[in-house]
Structures are given as structure tokens and as C-alpha cells.
Length: 214
Ligand SMILES: NC(=O)c1ccc[n+]([C@@H]2O[C@H](COP(=O)([O-])OP(=O)(O)OC[C@H]3O[C@@H](n4cnc5c(N)ncnc54)[C@H](OP(=O)(O)O)[C@@H]3O)[C@@H](O)[C@H]2O)c1
Image (spheres, protein in one colour):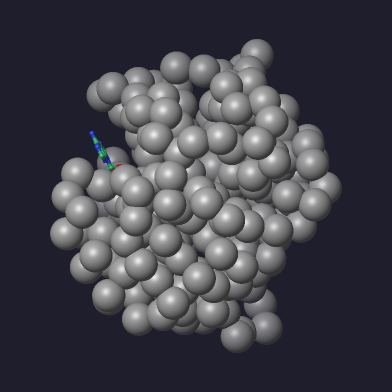
């Protein structure tokens, strides 16, 4: 597939690199320095390049949205028309200090995004996992017991694409249902992030906590 990365930070940089190593064509976009995007594309060592959000979106089979919630409008204003595009979003609706969800319980970031780009097909995925464990998961992908990763969305074919990307990273994709299920997975993801970043042994602990959920 051709995968456009919108937000090439901790999540976008790692997932884009893994998608490229799994054989997908990847365009890294949206960082403060274009040079960083070029470095990411070079280090990923696959069919990769650096581009603008518009270039990342063009002809993309899937877009990974991996920006801070506060950058959402800015990045979406640069992509051009996203009608019909599959957007796999790992972005959590966090406030500026990353202390609280600004959308929760009666809606979710994923649903707000879907309303913001109503003609796109949004899937919520990857936000329940800390970025630090992603390369380890990819390295262990051929093991018989794989960790599960939940995703949700309203459109069957875009969920199929998200499931394929989740599998390529090394997880077993678990369809959690329609997009509104993000009302439950996003607060869960915040809990996991708090374990990951505020506790000793953080990322490993959070990852094990997810496995415990299995
Ligand atoms: N990190 C995790 O473990 C994790 C886990 C689950 C979910 N998430 C979610 O994933 C999303 C991305 O998180 P992240 O940790 O990957 O964030 P991040 O490392 O800060 O990446 C965000 C990207 O946006 C770019 N950016 C920020 N401001 C910009 C601007 N003014 N102009 C152009 N580019 C700009 C950053 O550029 P630079 O590269 O130049 O800084 C970076 O490439 C968030 O919504 C977060 O809630 C993260």
C-alpha cells in the first residue's frame, strides 16, 4: 500500500519506518524541519520519501494521523481534499499540557475527527500502545503468540486496511466495533500512557498491562 504519514514524531516516525520495512510505500510529512523528514525516509531504508501533507495524502491507500490534538486543524488544512481517504488515527484528544482528554465519555477524538472530515473514512488504532515498544513488537512479529491491538471504525473496507497495517506491525488486530467505541479505548489509552510515562519501568509495564488485558 501507499501510506502517507501526517505527523512524523514518535508515533509517525516509528510506525512509518515499520510500514516501510514491511514493504509499503511511505511518505513522511509534517515535522518542523523538512530535513528531519528526509532523515526519517533515508533511515527507514525502504520505498520512502519526505513530502508535504498534500503529497502524503495524494494517492494514499491509507493515512496515519499522528499529530498532537492541537495540530489537527493545521495538518488537515494542508492535506487538500480527503474525500474517500482512509485515515488511521492514533491521535488522542489531549489538552496542551497532555494532562487530560479534552473530549471524552459522550464523544471521542476519533468521532470529532470523523465529523471534521466527513467524507474521509476514519479508523482509530495504535493509540493504546506506547511508541517505545513498537520496534520490539515488529522484531517479534513472527512469534506464534502475538499481542492484540484494538481498533474501531464505521467503514468495513477501511477497517480491513487498518487491520492489515496492524498485522504488519506485529499485532493481532482486534475489531472493537464502531467508531464510538473510541469513547472507551481513548481513556484506556490515557491510562496506559500514564503508566508508561509516570511509573518506573514505564513502557514495558504499560505493554504488559495491555497483554494482561488479553
Ligand atoms: N508517543 C506515544 O507513545 C503515543 C502513544 C499513543 C498515542 N499517541 C498520540 O499520537 C499523536 C502523536 O504523538 P507523538 O508522541 O508522536 O507526538 P510528537 O512526537 O510530538 O509528533 C508530532 C509531530 O508533529 C510535528 N509538529 C508539531 N508541531 C508542528 C508544527 N507547528 N509544524 C509542523 N509539524 C509540527 C512534530 O514535529 P517535530 O518532529 O519537528 O517535533 C512531530 O513530527 C498524539 O496525538 C498522541 O496523543 C502517542
